[in-house]
Length: 296
Image 1: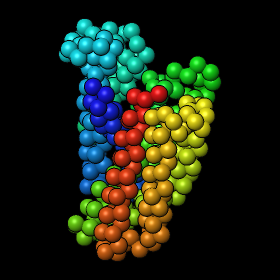
Image 2 (image 1 turned 90 degrees about the horizontal axis):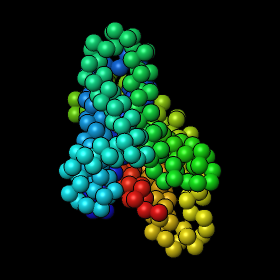
Image 3 (image 1 turned 90 degrees about the vertical axis):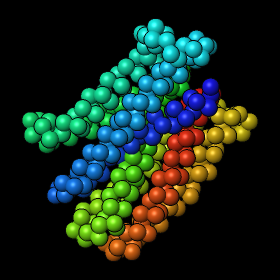
């Protein structure tokens, strides 16, 4: 059952971490973002919310089986209700899935909701929901179980996830938009994507710094010594994340060097390929994080 839990957590992380980054790219590309690109970002955000909700429902079934030790409990609504009402996982799950449902509905009803609320209010509301959905994740994880320095551990874990969401989550929409301009050979639309890419690149260093520092803090909280780092599964997984981070940083640096020439179609194609590699590497690291969530 552990393998099932890892896959579900990985899919859940992919959906959740993508949402804040999608809203970030929409904000960075504004003003004047062509309607076709805004529609594509909305579709990507809705798909991410759908993945988050579907994997969240399956995680509830999985957790029900784990709590009882009986695989059949995954299909028992009575056990689901017991988990929802009697565990921290259930309480956090309820809040996060409720927000995910409301966010998905707001995305679907954007043409009506945005004029009614106003563009700024709509954006703050939906982006705030996306950030909150991710920010609540540590409240049902290892950080919430730390007995000493519990608030500090939660703050560090939350910062780590939010930095990862804003950075990793931005890669998919950037890739999709940049690849779209290559296919359609649209210089005007490519200019909007390049502008978003340049603005994101200016933020990426700060996000990566927060990601690394909070990651070090999380390691110190959960791994008390060098022997524990080297001699436990949890510690070795942390080291693997660190090792994979190096080529990821190299890819980001390579893309940043070529930013000034992204207006050229050939360079845009090259950038799209490198963005895909960067996203795949980040997705692999996310998979390791999913494994960490079931290890300690």
